[in-house]
Image (cartoon, rainbow, N blue to C red; front, side, top):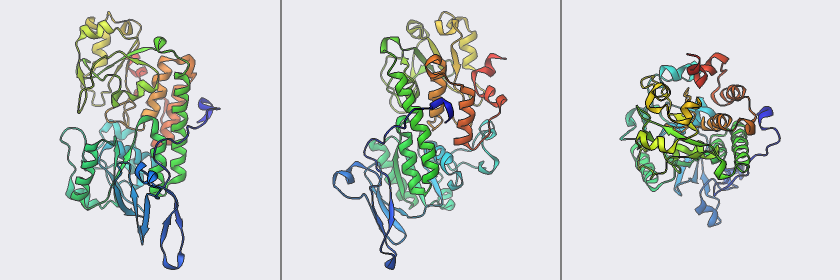
Length: 386
């Protein structure tokens, strides 16, 4: 990662997931034996390997505690949501049989032509979203990954989708701070250990640096932020929401003191409440379609001008392209988002050339050489120069 993370050690693996290690043995009868646990606390607690094999298939225990039989060699992958699709894209884009939604024109700018799909295949995520079962089956993935929270609803959904498709569905847990672990797990399943180790190491180092910086900042001295969502910026996400993980890791204090909205999130607030909170920084959800211009509304409307974030010019629209750096849908670009937010809020502590870091991230994760001009178009610099 260059000088930015020089001297920072990678975070140790944590949690129940252990690496999936396949050891060739008993060559005369061509049987694979498993040397280490694949995933899941249950198999570890029981002392079992979590994996067994016969012929060309293995049985693993996924992060939902489900036993799933998958091919020993996985060439074709589909994911139930963009969270998994984006992660597999960064790891092994040639394995994806399709995306969930067709990338927008803006998103395709940052995707090499050979990886741009023509049609999205849907998936099982968000509000009433259903995958195109017939087309997914035609695409013939060897395995389907369901990546994200390991809630009971997601576990039951995985069983249902597996029955619909007659294709194994593997649940893989992912939070921002365990991104490295997830890369290693999926990388070993796909036989992409070296590439996965590179992306995991980068992710671990960013998280480790963010945690080290956070340890230097007392709670009462942390910068306060408001996350503005919706057409007028009057929806938000409180502390503890999966949509605000980047802000938490970057050691900011989210002013939205309210209950988490179940389901899709986006809790409604009044402008009077935001004024009462008076945050140091305002981060505006991305607007890849260019339809809302909430950033302009907040910075140019007299209604918001009383806020210190507006007065100080500390209102930032979250970059998006090809994926969102912070939210909706969550993606591994959040690892870059931690650095972007950290550099804006605590520039002296991060001591980071954010443009250089962004270009390095795009090269490593997105298979793309980002120009200086494109960096400016992605970030608030473009808005400031209008």
